[in-house]
Image (cartoon, rainbow, N blue to C red; front, side, top):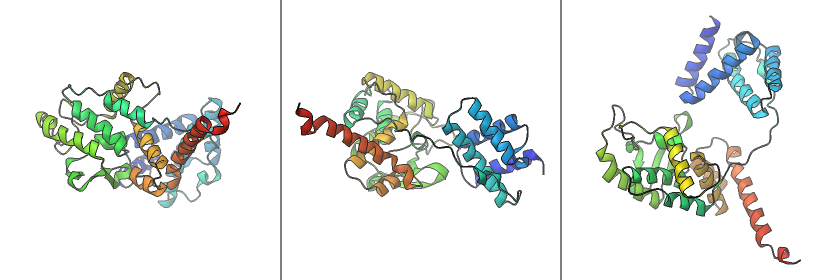
Length: 297
């Protein structure tokens, strides 16, 4: 089997067996190409020496520990697959650990800031209820922006009080939907969506563009940035900021971490634990602000 055949087989495995998104697969492809460019050798014919050369090159180029960790993650997936398929007998990636890195705390909006953004959405535009419904869902349900783009009419269970969301790896989860999100979602489906003819294969897509296609992540990103600017929000935000805010506010109000994990669709509880750090930071700020000793000088 040629070197390119191994790579092709691996990416077909990622797409059809693992069900990874196109963006994720493209990221893996870029990492594999970088490995080949630096080492001038296919990963399938490489070992620990080549991996070390690659990491040293990345370090000399000033690339962060996060970038090195991502590269190791890409290679780990490839070599583990190759060993399972018996294309290799020894797995060189087992000799490497991810470099330590500081865990960054994501940007989170306060509840008042979220409401300011919602209030800043103009309600006299052609797609005003669509845009309001999207932002409501990003926050009220903690959706990823890709999940909002790909939301299906056939998976809405509004009468029962929830929606079925298709997340990473095509895994589906049930997410309760808040009454405010329900209100704007129903307004959109009753009064705006019927005026847009869906493109072929988009008839089941909830949120349509003015041309009848599904909305892109970039378009939602740009809309949210515009609404935040109008609202006077100075923080650097993205659609994922609404998801971070959703999880943080739940934990601040006493929600169980396991419940938040299920709502977000996290495979590991350790991913969800970042929001306990955010909540702890929030509590610390409140103590510093209101502690009675601070008034004694």
